[in-house]
Length: 142
Length: 127
Image: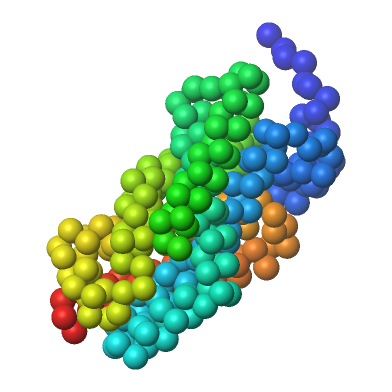
């Protein structure tokens, strides 16, 4: 039996090859109205990237100890300065946010909590937990 | 000119062309490792805040702390590399820039991750 050739398949020969064709690119953030779900999701990346910067600071701190007491004392003084404390405070919140929201992501990955009421509730619980943990850490340090 | 059908060429490639599912799974694996390790790290940093070199070396010399700090650092740099890779692939559409950044991310992971691990071992083993 003859099969009818689909128009799209016929058109494929005349258009550019698949690799150079303009395909949709992700993500189109600016076309959507801001919502709690999307904002919290974008924040996962906006905390993740600075945390990678925090990893560089961690490498510096660990390495300073390998260079001896003087280098380590300089690193400790740097992190103890007000600029260092502000950066560490920001990184503490970024870490707890990324951790709490990451657990939320893992729960979605196993198919839990996808309906809108649960999404909003878990989002609020997540932000509250991250703020509480950040406060707990800095109250115990200062 | 390919002899394969359009469906045959597209099948299994997905949007990432290769290894997308594997990368996705590995990112989940490193995040599951980091959840307890990050909590341990923050708790530890609070417990040794303001320590001098001798106190820090004594703390890191404890075999449990040496192990957990090594695992934490390894997981941090693996996960940071995975995350930065995905962000780069999503937002950088200029191909040469994207490839340069992906190579830079690999260099970042091995240089800073390697330096961190060596520093941990040197201090922990009394160098």
